[in-house]
Image (cartoon, rainbow, N blue to C red):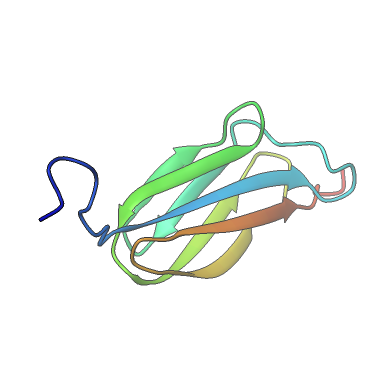
Length: 96
């Protein structure tokens, strides 16, 4: 019999990680607000434009990205049990 210790549990939850950047320059956007619908969870991107949501049920989610001076962007992504979905989202500056 094997299984003395070790990580043999099946992961039933999924994760969504992503990267937010300026559409024109490609520069990562820090402190963009990421809202995960329908859970209502929010996250601010780090200095590298990254975010991650853990322990999600397998289903389809809408990611809403907002940052002052930029147009809101929405993306639909499917989360699968035991996997991490990866997404890159660009934001377009609002003309002044």
